Image 1 (cartoon, rainbow over the protein chains, first blue to last red):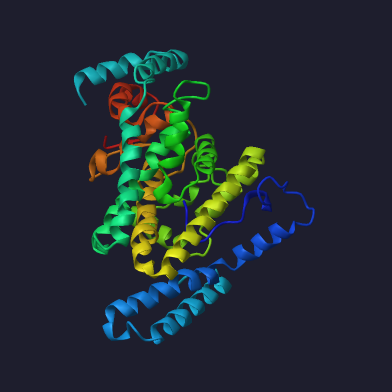
Image 2: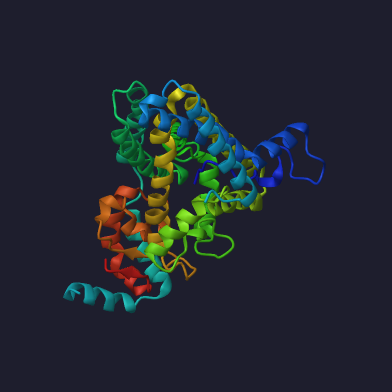
Length: 90
Length: 299
């Protein structure tokens, strides 16, 4: 079933690359890095704006302020970073 | 048990294994074939409803409290039409309506973000190795009780890479074919595209909207799908073999709310039989299933 995060591609390669022991292409290495950092990216990319928007909608006074964005980035970034290290969201 | 059923079963006990198989196939044949228009209409209606939620929700015409349950229902309903296509029930390769089969297969699971080819290949592995502790990609749902299954599933979803995803990736890797590698790559693109969609809309100021349209429905709908489409029909997932790896069961929710899964045993015996014919086929085949020692829990 699909999730927010993704499992490594079968064969460890990209597209039709064979799953050989040969060193991965630059594209493969970049993709590997992207996948490894996905929980952190998810924290910044989705959780941060979600928290920001929740704060702005629940606290009308915060709608024009900068702090909801900072709080969102702090929580989303920290949460994502911890998930990246521990392999778990909770 | 009725008298006629008892007589039938007595008659069946006199048949050899081969005769029983011939009888089983001749009964099953009556329920095979034809275009499953119900599943086709289901696929496109569900997709149309889900797609229409986007402008309605993003424009604020539909409140989030209404969007989230409808989108969750869309996710729950997205899998089975594609499942019909995975088994080429609409049409086989080379047949006139094969394009329709593939269209349904690819489009219907869109609300779940599921790649059709990866789903098809890993689902075939599930059929080949149902309940096998290492080879069945769906074995992760095996649990002693319903509540334990739900708790275990939620725990798995809290992992950054769920056990289910790892298990599907391993199944494709085990297949090792070019088709499997391509399916894995497409599944990866789907997952990355989903995240890109979430991030894009979220930073454009629609985080809560995409949470209601995509994120929450996939989490909640995913639990429902794995519970009723995987755990329930295979519980206790202890036996292997044609007549023992799947069960019939009676759910308190009934057949519609379990999306026909009470009769999933028929699907594992005859994977190309349309879903809507399973109840009637089950009733016709029941005495044979009893004679074969199938597990029929209350049904």
